Amino acid sequence: YMEHDAGMGRFFAFISLFSAAMLGLVVSINFLQLYVFWEGVGLCSYLLIGFYYDKVSAREAAKKAFITTRIGDFGMLVGILLVQVAFGTMDFIELRLMMPEYVLVAGTGYLTVIGLLLFMGPIGKSGQFPLHVWLLDAMEGPTPTSALIHAATMVAAGVFLVARAFFIFSECPLVMDFIAGLGAFTALLAAVIAVTQRRFKAVLAYSTISQLGYMMLAVGLGAFSASMFHLMTHAFFKAMLFLCAGAVMHALHDETDITKMGGLWKKMPLTFVTMLIGVLAISGIPPFSGFFSKDEILAAAMHASTPLYLMATFTSFLTAFYMARLLIVAFLGESRSEHEAHEVDAFMRWPMIMLALLTIVSGLWGYFGGFSLWIYADAPHHEAIDWTVAGTSTVLALLAFAAAYQIYGRHRLRAAMQQRSFGFLYRVVYNKFYVDELYGYFRERFVYGTAVILKWVDEKIFDGIMNGLGAYGLAMSEVLTENVNGQAQRYVVVFYTGVVILLCYALYWAVQVLMYLGGGLLR
Image (cartoon, rainbow, N blue to C red; front, side, top):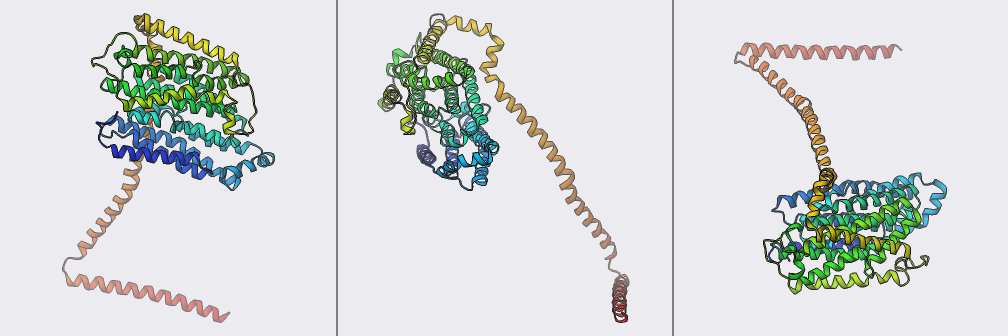
C-alpha cells in the first residue's frame, strides 16, 4: 500500500515506538508508569497522523489530535496526583487492597472527584463527546496507521484504563452513571453522523467512535468483561475494514468518495468478501464475532437501564444501516469511477484474510464459558447468550440491511430525494452538528480576545516601563550634556559644590552620632 511513499524507515520507526509504548501501557503496574506510556502512544499518534508532513491537512490534523487529547490528559494527570495525595501510592494492587477501608472511613466524595478527573483522559483518547473531533482528522495518516492505531489499539486505551482502574470507578456511582450515559450518547451521535458521510474512511472513523461509545457504556454499567470482549472483537473486524478501505483507495488511485465507486465486487472479489464479513460482524449478525460481544453489552444495558438499552439498540440499528449503505454504494451497482479498479496483490490480501478468519472465530471465546474468565478467574458464570436481546438486535440489523438496500441499491435516486427532503437536517448531520465549527469560532474569538488584551498589556505596561526607563535615561543624558561643555571653571564649581555637599552630609551624621553617644553616657 505504501511502497511508493517516501520515508518508510521513519514510518516503521514510529510504528515500532508505538508498539513498544502500547505494550508498556498494557503491562503497567502503577498509574505513573501507565501515564508515561499513555503519553508515548499519544506522541506516536501525532507523528503518524502527520506522516505526510508535506500536506497542510496532515499537519493540521496532527496538531488538532495532539492538542485535543492533551486537554483530557491534563485532567487525568491531576487525577493521578490526587490519587498519590490520598493514598500515598500509585500501585494498582496496593490501591485495590486499600480501597474498601478508605471508602468506609472517608466516603466517596473525594473519590468521585478523582474518578471524574481520571476519566478525562479516556474521553480524549477514546474519542468520546465532546473531545471526539480529532479522530476523523486522524484519517489523514496512512491507512495502516488508521487500522492499527486509530481503530484497534490506541483509541481503545481509554476503555482499557477505565477497566484497569475499575476498583476506583466502581466505588463512585455518580462517575459510573456519567461514563455509561456519555458512552451511550457518543455511540448514538457518531452513528447518526456516519449515516450521512460520503468518504470511505470517514464512515469507518465515526463507526469507531460509535463502537468506543458502546465499550464505554458497558464499562459504565459494570460489565467491564463485556467491554473488553467487544474491544478485542472490534479490533479484528475494524482493522480489517480499514485495510479494505486502503485496498479500495489503492485500486482507485486514492479516491475516497463512495458515490464515485460502485461495481467493485466484480473487480475486487476478495476485498468485497472480507468487507462483507466485517460489515456482518459489526452489525451483530451471527455467527460472526460482533454478534457475541455486542449481545453481552446490550444484555447488560437491558438489565441496568431501559433508556440506555433503547439508545444502544437504536445505535445497533443505525450501525447495520450505515455499514450496509457503505457496502452497497461502494461495491454494488455499476461502476462510477474514472479509474479501472483491480484486486490488490498478495501482500495486501493476506492481512485481510487473516483478520477475516479472526473475525469469524474470535466470538467463540465469549460463547464457550464467557470471555470474563479470561480476565477475572472468579467472575460469575451466566448463560452465554441472552436470546431475547440477541434475537431483537439481529432482526433490527436485518431490517436495516433491507432498508439500506431499498434506498441505496434498488432505488438510488430515492437517496438523493431524501437528502433534498431533509435538506436542513441532512446538512446539520453531514457537517457533524457543526461541533468543529463551534470549536473554531470559540477558538478564534477566545484567542483573538486574549491576543487583544495581551497586546494592550505588552504595549502599555511592559513596553511602557521599558520605554519610560529609556526616556528617563535620555533626559538625564541631555542634562549632563549641557553641563559637560568644555568650560573648566564650571567643572571646578560643580566639583567643589559636590565636595561641600558631601562634607555637610558627613558632618550632619557625625553630630547625630555624638548626640546619641552623649545621651547614652548621661543615662
